[in-house]
Image (cartoon, rainbow, N blue to C red; front, side, top):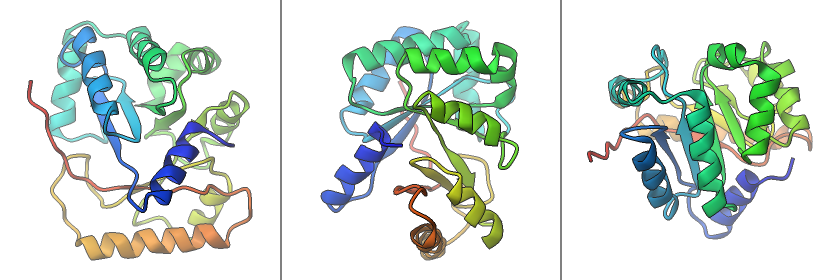
Length: 228
């Protein structure tokens, strides 16, 4: 699957630098401001991640929980997130955008309807943090048919056998959770250990078949909070 996400990684590699992916919660602090923030960040980021505000964000720390709460308080719904993504892609058609959220809202919205909406507004990828492998295989296939990257998650506790299977079934990108913590937590592992694990995954990727992803996103749990 060739995509804008794949291209972003290739450009960064050619320029001998890491790929920068940023995250913001849709609708914080207002719908209009959220789009302005996303546009501003995109001038410096290679890939933009936009989060669906959720009332029980189990994988997210205090900062993102608070951001999601502000968005929900502002009345932001799923269709508002799609609207923000659509307006962003009108202005930045070549900038990859990844939507991040939880499966229950996709289930409630209807899987097929949700994915058709993603395709229509030109979403490049999806991260669904509570839909693990192999339970996500059917959903990932649906994503691929629509040209949407389903981004698999791996962590320090992922076994070699499981890692090999996940890589084989992945699209253009894998998301490595660098430590056992919520997003925004304090760094509890040394940078050298993170890089060691990162390189193990990259080596595993190289030894996999040709259909495996060419890119690997390393997630480092550090938060830089923009206060408006």
